[in-house]
Length: 462
Ligand code: NAD
Image (tube, rainbow, N blue to C red; front, side, top):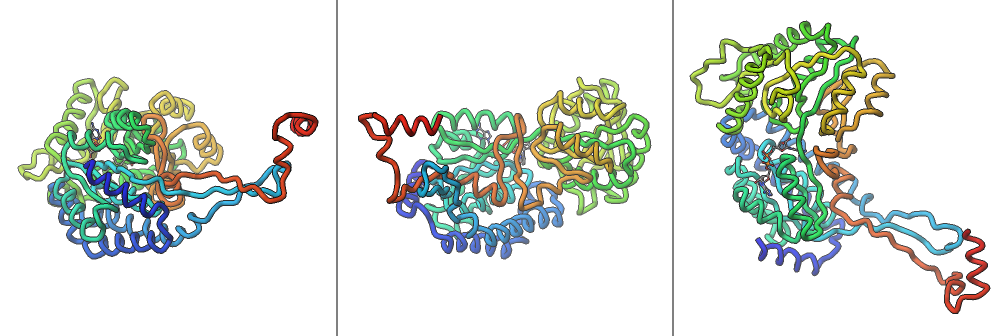
């Protein structure tokens, strides 16, 4: 790994600020590779998952990247332009500007849930900002990680982009390398290790982490509309999405009607589970057991488990598909209300007033995403202003991540920094402030020996 890093660093020194044409060529190569290999990528991810819906891969791992590349290509020239900044009267006619400089070599560590998208999306940002990059993808999707390595190897020299495969030991060693920026996507626990390792080198980090993303449904909001939009976000990738709605806060009087609508709508979206190509499997035996453990713990502590597909609960299929369940009567001490769920289980928590609901969110860690369903302008304004979260969608779920012009990232335990679009370009760039002195200037007034001239300057300044 160190040899590759040295090679990339040497290549960066030889070409410290790649031209727009060069960067556009890199992005074109990426887009071509993704389009030409879309089917192989989809089949490989599905093999790693045991089954991954092809449509979901085409949406989230293929189309999302192609759209992002298109957006970046369209705006990159503008993003790379020096930015003029005002100059205070006493310094005029000197000029100020900011130039966005490539930082050097970026390190990217990615998780398994969108194994192709989350390795390539940070790469788009890193390359558009003129950097070189090394990627360490997840060991839980080994076939996709090897494929990513092969495909990137076909379009980029190792001194521009390199993929390092391996388990947590390799990842740990990777995070100690002296990168110029590191972007980690994964759990909050591992994110803390990555930040510790990076601190030894003073490597700046962007941490894209997880957590429990709540949904708040306002008193008068149409429950059917909310149910559809919540389920479409929750059941994508079988709930294994960092910004999946984790639990719902709903008015106490609506819990019963809401759970009925959720169950009915879920059955409409997915008439069956085990033999349904649209429904994705759980990534590993370990994660399947973890999710079953959350259900057992909740049941033991008094929760009511609503099996939406009772007939599929005892399936002899050997595909790791978990039939979705709703969970009511939850209490804060249950594991399902403490850990990020990351699967097709959806707890419903009653609230009495919006203040209670906001308080419930505020007294927990800042979520990666917050969802509010409300048609009341005051409630929407209040929630946008008063609840701290990485990002937010109002009257929908997940949609904020698909917006090229919004920053994507967490806050507090759900992450540090952001990327996507212009924000990704800026994350991987150093904003260099530049003061350009003019021929005509009063600089001499500040020279020693200090006398009347500097007194006049001080009089003017203070
Ligand atoms: P994870 O933290 O277990 O692993 C992520 C990556 O870290 C893997 O490549 C792994 O090899 C590596 N790693 C493991 N130990 C390491 C160490 N000691 N030092 C450095 N790297 C190490 O996460 P996961 O299970 O792959 O992914 C699920 C988590 O990721 C969830 O919490 C989810 O919310 C979060 N996530 C966040 C986003 C986001 O954009 N914010 C996106 C997807 C997933």
